[in-house]
Length: 61
Image (cartoon, rainbow, N blue to C red; front, side):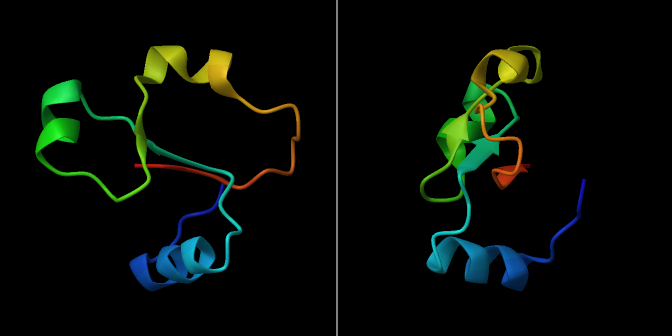
């Protein structure tokens, strides 16, 4: 697991290198403010949404 700075995340998003962007906060917080393109995904549901590609870049916040 790697921690990214915001400018690194923006660059990765701009370059299309992020395969999944997930907001792990509750629906209320997600509805109020989230990064454009992020999906709301509860921590308990993460396992069911993992891609087959183990090298995929996934970002959770």
